[in-house]
Length: 139
Ligand code: ZN
Image (cartoon, rainbow, N blue to C red; front, top):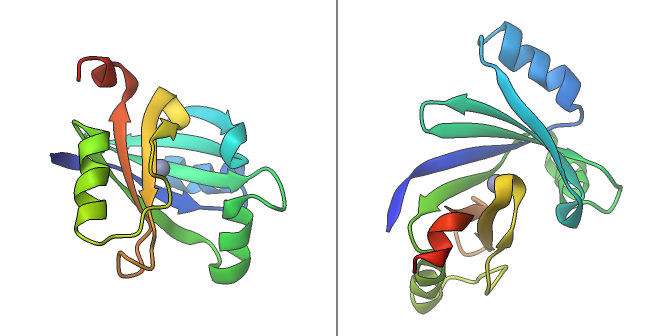
């Protein structure tokens, strides 16, 4: 079951410059900056209620975020839904005919298990499912 929007992923050219906007204009605090080598990105997290803003800065030219920036510029990159059972959520999407980017969840930022649905199947919105890792062990 999907419980809430966990985060919005926003593609940016510079975390430092973008963080200044979120901190100064919006008054939010940057929780942490973390590199995710598997995705070739640096991420910065801001908390808004139970939802986060995840800034994504590419660390390599062949990063998926670098490609996104080249094609579409800065802006919302993906929407992430928090689910209590990521495998079931993926099966449900696949059974309804949605193309998956990942059949199996993998470890994303903040130690969460994540997996993506293909934007061609989701009307243009790259969609992520995510689940805190510890919950996984209980299922
Ligand atoms: Zn994400």
